[in-house]
Image 1: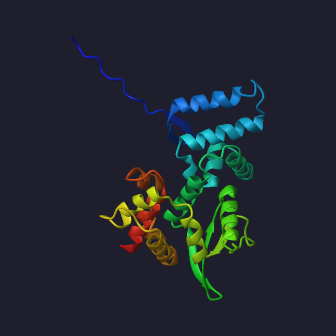
Image 2: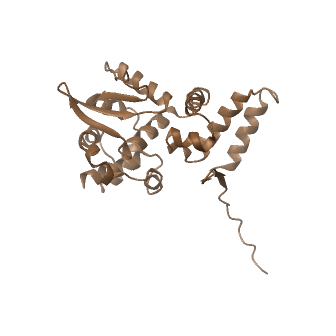
Image 3: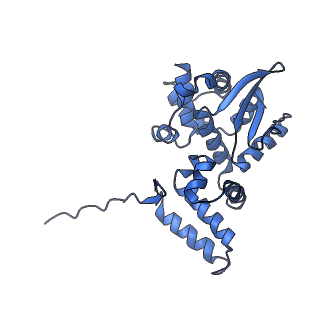
Length: 244
């Protein structure tokens, strides 16, 4: 009697422009569309509601969230300003795990070494671009919460923050599992990295890594795939390269 071959999962691809995205969890994706479209009655969603829903599900079920705003704008054929506003409303309407979202956006940004670090008026400052309005607002709110302020007066996307304050704010978004994942990269043999030790290493990285951007930039998706559930692993990989 012949054996029936097991059914294997098919990795569904979504072609968009010149790129192809892998879709994760198709069943959840389909149910999300139906639930949102029908819960208030068929036809109740406006055109804008539909656009924000599709954007939310596209970013949730692919790795497209890692792309800069201008690249997403080209892929989705939508002006950057409109897309930025849609993304902000999307985070408010479909919040999900906002802690993890802010952590991942910042981790991806710093892993790619997209920042400047320099001294000004006796203080060490870090300057970087945050295109995501939601993440930008969260950072500014966190700074106010610890009695600090960020300067975004020069450009609506660029933040200039004191190094110590930025390290303190970022540490708020790291969980114990994050620290365990970081330990596998930064301190092999240890089960976790104390927050104080991570803060010290992160501060050293931000102080000097900008001058070596071409050397240590890492692929975020690849780093995540090799050992972690969040892009904080990619940041740890960049920090390890900097140390090395």
